[in-house]
Image (tube, one colour):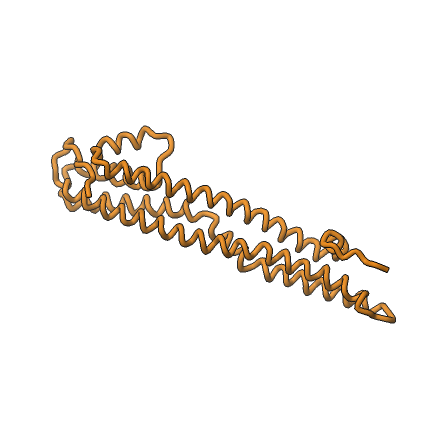
Length: 233
């Protein structure tokens, strides 16, 4: 008899344990692709908003005006939030008439704390992709091993074993490994790409913190109420 060896038939004919493994891997793959697409658009938006604020920052506009504008926007860029936290702390310490060094140190600490919060948000779900990429092949291999064991146990009751009787059981077991690889490979590729993009964003933000700190250093020690000079390269 000609047996149906299509993917759908192999999945439906597999044992319960293998079907559970396949369903789990398929759900994991779907979730992984959702995270990947969300991360692609999210990182693109972060890069665009950071570049837009950086152009505005170096346009010669007063930093006091930029700080006021940042507080009025419903949604700001990560770089703009770092700027606002540093500026807010700097102005607060200047009103307390602390020396210039204390003002600069306080602003830098506030910006570093804001930087860490922003990086935590940007790196969200990255560990999920790493876990999917490393675990999925082994889960698929477990399903394959279990399926082959189940197939051989069934063959033990047969008096005559041929390739036609062995092939369906092994084929349906190997589908689990295929699904595991299908879930793992995109997750690994996406993780490496996102990690590289996030490193570039982190470098961009850290560079901005250093450049903004230099501007604040030139304005440190001025009396309260004095305008903070504009950024210029």
